[in-house]
Length: 120
Image (cartoon, rainbow, N blue to C red; front, side, top):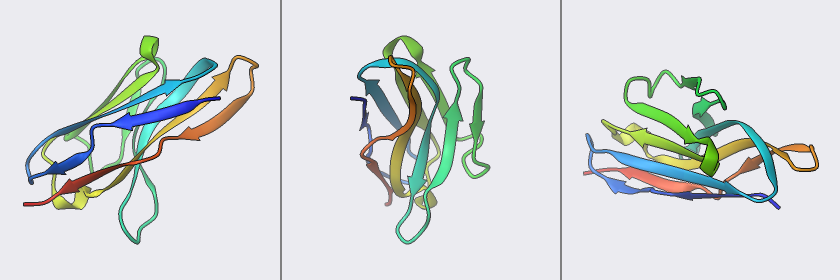
């Protein structure tokens, strides 16, 4: 059984910062990639950022220069540092991981989602 547990969402004023964390646990052999998606009300879920096991990252154009994704492979944890937040960043943020478990079977896993609200 694999679980992704997120933390770090909340309410922040425009221009503020938040840091999201997502820890994967279970019978994990490897994780590649890990990332974050977000879904605003009435909109589809879109990629925010992803990072592979070597540390190569890619970002949605809307967050480049403001968000930074990182990971700790030893802890099976991915982070999303979000700076200069604006109301358009308001959404439920979901952690994502493509995981190979110890039986060598692979699958896509999602966290439960964490709300980020940017408002004055």
